[in-house]
Structure formats: structure tokens, C-alpha cells
Length: 212
Image (tube, rainbow, N blue to C red; front, side, top):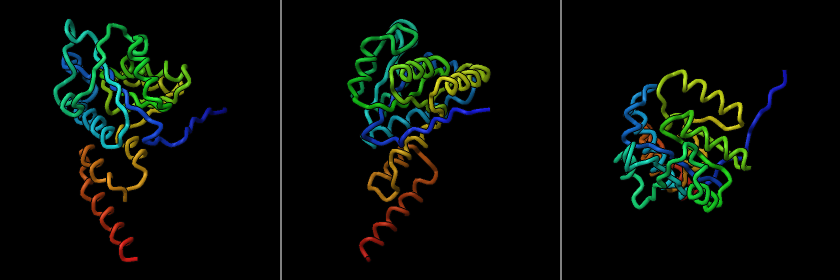
């Protein structure tokens, strides 16, 4: 049996963009595959990390005024000044403003997260692959309504050539070096328990350079 391995070039702050789809107050209440608190934590961490790393963010809502409400407050607070493109299309990519915003980033690697993994995240991610982009889905920043949807959504993404990962790993890949000045800020943004350790590693590396 032959396997088709997909191993793209590393993510960097120069080639990546983050795409957040429909993390709205009315939709978050339907999440059932893991806790809403954990999902919020991961989405906010991804958004804050993108800002720390100077990675552009494209964000959307669906029918915010008539159906599902705005993006949840913690996400809005993490992205001050961010425009949330409000649309009606099921697939975010089918909205011309969304596609224009993606292309305006100038990045060829797109990290998607959506309130529903199998629709909000998966459909534009699969379209991105068809459009010639490299697409990733941060599954820990994407919820859904039951485990069957989660399992089949992940299977479909893999079948479509989308890289499935967790958000913090993708952000750490972009960081690349724990000795960089942004390292502690990044781990703090991700709200990882071992952010203090990352700060100690950086301080040690700087001390070694100074003493050499």
C-alpha cells in the first residue's frame, strides 16, 4: 500500500496567516466535543500568539446581527481593532471580501480554526488547497457538535491534503527559537503552564552569549 505523505516547508511569520471563522457567542453554546472554556482558551491563545508573531489574522462571523451574535468577547479583546467580516455564505471562501482579505495577506500558508471543525474550518481550508495554498487546521481551536462530526471532519481534511495540528504547535513552529525575545511573550499568549520555563531558557541563552 502506498501512502501520500504531505510534509510542507516550515511555517514562518513571513509565509503564514491565521484564519478564524465564526467563533460567535450563539454558536459556541452548541459545542459538545470538548468544553467551551477549553475552546475559548485555545482560540484566544491562537489569536494572541498570531499578534505576538506579527502573523496577519483574517476573522469572520456569519449573520452576526440576525442569527449568531458577535464573536465572543474574549476573542474581540484579544484582537483589538480587528475587522470581523460578516457574511451569509456557508463556506467563508465563497464571500468575495473574505477571499480578497486572504489574498491581501500575501501569505501562502493558511492556519484555519472554526467554531465547527467540519464546516467553518474545513470548507475554506479545503478550498484553499484547491486554490494552491497550503492549509492547516488547528483542531484544538475548532469545536463541533458531536464526536462523530469531529472524527469524520478530521478524516475529510486529511483526505483533502490539509495539515491537521494543534494551534500552539503551529505557533511554536513559527517562533522557531526559544532564545528569541518574543519567546516568553508567545508562551504567555498561549497561556501554557511552562511559559516560565521558556523564559528561563531564553535568559540562560542570553547569559551564555554575553559571557562568551
